[in-house]
Amino acid sequence: MKIPSLKALLESTKQTLLRFPFVILVSLIGSAFMIYLMGQPFDRREETEHLYKIVMVCSLGISFLLSLKFITERIKVSNAVSLFVQATGIVMLVLYYFTLPEKPGFTDTTRYLLFMTGTHLLVSFSPFVSSGFSRERNGFWQFNLNLFMRILLTGVYSGVLYIGLSVAILSFDKLFNIEFKGEIYGQLFFFILGVFNTWFFLSGMPENLEELESRDFYPKGLKIFTQYVLLPLVIIYLLILYLYAGKIIIQWQLPMGWVSYLILGFSTTGIFSLLLIEPLREMEGINWIKKFLRWFYLILFPLIILLFVAILRRTGEYGITERRYFVFVLALWLTFIAFYFSISKIKNIRIIPYSLCIIAFLTSFGPWGAFSMSERSQLSRLEEILVKNNILVNGKIVKAVNPVSEEESQDVSSVIQYLSERKSLDKIQPWFDIKIDTLTAGTVNNIYKSKEAKITELMGIEYSLYRKNFVQGDKYFYLNLKDFGNMSVKGYDHLVDYKYQSYEKQEKGNRFTLDSANIRIEYTADLQEMIFYKNENEICRVKLEKYFEDLRTSKKEMTIKEMSTEGENEMLKYRIIFENINGERENDRNKISSFNTDILLRLK
Image (cartoon, rainbow, N blue to C red; front, side):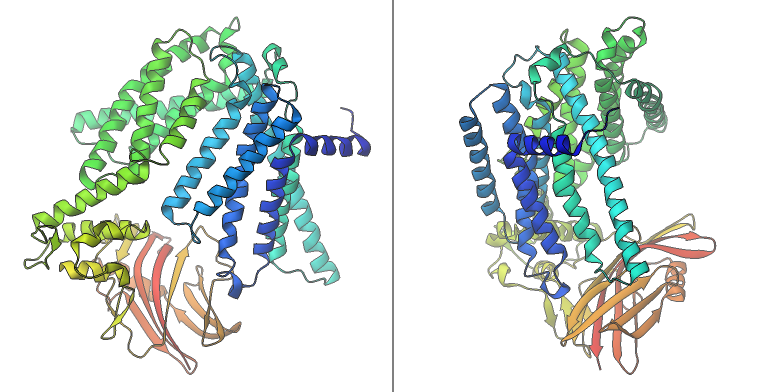
């Protein structure tokens, strides 16, 4: 292979910039803001948090503007018109920026992910929107093969470049005592991602899109990977799911909710495999692929029925949430795809990204969208429980006289939490005589209560979100605070939230600024100790191993007293209140997977 000269590389870089100026522009802007944000000190993170919106919009703009560029190239408009179309795309992105709140919540983030999905799918067929649906089938496949291979190649090049430069920086640090801030590695990552990664990826985009239809190229490595890796995985998934379906029939029990994800995972892997081997079905001597294509979608139908039973069971018990909504919509889409490829004579694979792109955009807004339907479902579920218990009478909240069951208390609490997270508590405001938006988390008579707990208290219901504790086979355990939301804060000055997840990096712990002092809290998994630092000096070390063991062996619902541990020394008084603890027993020792805590502190 001929190695390109430096002049050729510079010329290619220039041509890529001239061809995709707006795409590269938004990528550079997003990368620059991420590099800036990564370099901000901890005490400025909150005031610069709104800049992440710019990064979000720029990331969305890469795929959106790339799609517009491909469309204008294919319909052969002038450069002036092409620039105008892409400039219009920039205006649309700016308008979208102004629709985002200062701190995007769950709904905003999920809608953004739907837009990202939709625009990425749009890239896959944007060069062919002007051609007939059944035309240029090979061109469509070759274009997406190029995208797929380019993503893999770009990922490898970017990864090697990042590792190499990171090692170089580390070498200067260790060998020449040149100190670099830890943030430089994150800044380097976003520089490579936003500059090199995007530029290199775009440089491999085919220029003459019409020629793709006559292109006859199928990588041997891809054929081997699909036939001997992906398709065997599909068969293994299929056997597992049919065995599970047989178990359901024999035991005559409803399927577990998580089987929905397994079915969708199996279907996605299978469809992706079939997309990759699409050209092979026309080749002589590979008749088994035609048979597999014919039978795969027929085999899907029993699993689709199982999928609907699983998701309808969950929605029947707990109402619609965004996650269940999307599973249900994907189940409908899978049904449509299975019918299409089973009975259609055309069997055009372009229908897959077309339909998914439409679904991504349509489900992101409107009364039929995920957010509106989920909200209505949860409100209806809440209203039904409150009316049943004579708490909602003639459209007004009346404090409960009779005790409400634990299960229904948890259901009410979860809906209130759901509405609060989505900033939709105004939907239940007409039920109350007081302004619930004025309620805030705080202390009442030395008892801390969250905003959600205060709302359920107005209903006469104990705020309780979590399931009961369990210890399964003396291996896995989940411990939960029964009366979370009510805790004494007397004798303490500060309340901080600390969470531990074993799969997340915990090197530097959580940082807080209290009484003008920098406080850092770090949990060490190996020693099972929580360490408190003040201005990077250790001031307290709490040993938790025996405490975790005592909790695990009790095997009962936990009160706030049992889920708390406290102490003090000459520098700090603390009380650690565990909301929940998740872990497993391994080698006669507890291995903690995660926990959530509220920590009361008084600095001395």
